[in-house]
Image: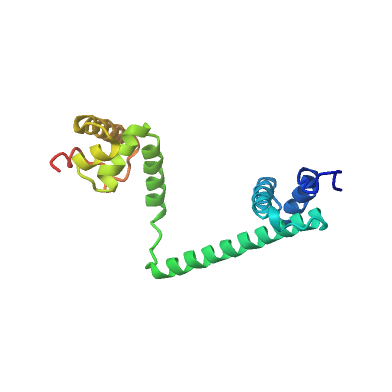
Length: 179
């Protein structure tokens, strides 16, 4: 299926490549990614294609090899994750009421405006001083303090409105100002 004068007519092979990729990965988006990656490899190795060779077979072979490489990479990554998980001490699941409550707090945190969430995260979770957090965000310390104050107030309002578990106090009033 090569056009006269064009021995490297990749566009004419897209249908075959897409069908084969779809049969390999069983997902349209992943298949398109696979075809894309295979075409990139084909163009990088265009010089290795023999003019008298079958372009369709060559491209399908590249697509297959890219798929196998992805599978190997995925398996290797899974093994590394499993080994890392085995190294970590097992944790007990939180009781259901705590798990639900923490989920609610997480949603409230992610519901904060981005600038407040960034500021609070750097100070409360990453344990940066106000000066370090302000420098990281490229803002004055006063602006950072204002954002943190508004974020804490918002979370305290959430806490007051939904808290039935009094021993789970996540946000305390301004304890980090002296950093």
